Length: 364
Image 1 (tube, rainbow, N blue to C red):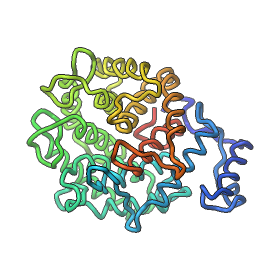
Image 2 (image 1 turned 90 degrees about the horizontal axis):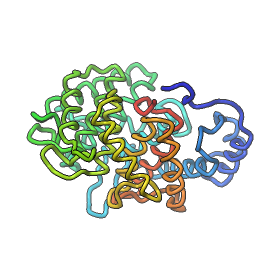
Image 3 (image 1 turned 135 degrees about the vertical axis):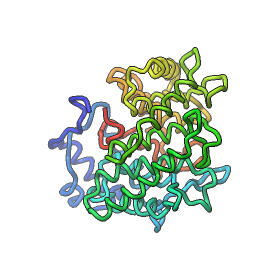
């Protein structure tokens, strides 16, 4: 992490009053004095306004009360599909992005339940999925690797750490065996094809595992990064898959974020793709790259802008932040890309909380 980007500490009377008022209103689920006494009061990161903290608190409370008893979250997709692995991993990441771990934080029980649910979905082959509900499971598998790898470094119980390690070790092996000859991945855990959106989830998951100390062959990540490079177009955008023409803005943002995760900060393809994304966000009133995939774009564009530089983040974040604050429902949720409130709320919270720097994979 670059100097100056760690979450600041110290007493902030305005924020303490805000937390008391939120608790009194029932958003934080605790009596006012209890909230004030147990909350780690800190200075707000740059561009995180008091209104932003209110929105975050409402969103976190929505996720906590919408978690199922088995620890999962599910989509409410208009076109069908519950995607419990992907939804649980994303919701868990959103809670961890606010400083909650399996052992600490207001929502630590929710994070812990999410970890247990995903561990229980590890199949003998290594894929993390509910195979009876998720025929197209590799997106969820990638998000699950990312979430569990972040949780692994925060867990204190040795037995639970060993269990997470075992599941991630098998998951990495499965991802390696499912990589296509061109270096990408497709929706099913086999090596018969590839496309960009699945590929970026595997890269992030693998990098998170490697950062957590799980052995990941460097050749797998190198080949995956090469796949993204082969998908690049002359305009700087990235195609849906190798060999297809036409740049996809959301995939391009995802490519930038994942190449940065892989340490490819000076990669010419990443730099050109970043300029492509920046030009598109400048033309948008609220920094959205694609009207049909608004929250998918948000998930990765926010990461790309945050990881690239302070200058890019300061230009991008206020428009994105203000748009999210205006579009949050009275329930504290966001409706995400026809996939539902769980997805939209999780993605919005991950984007809004990037400045806190709690998720290791998304630290500068």
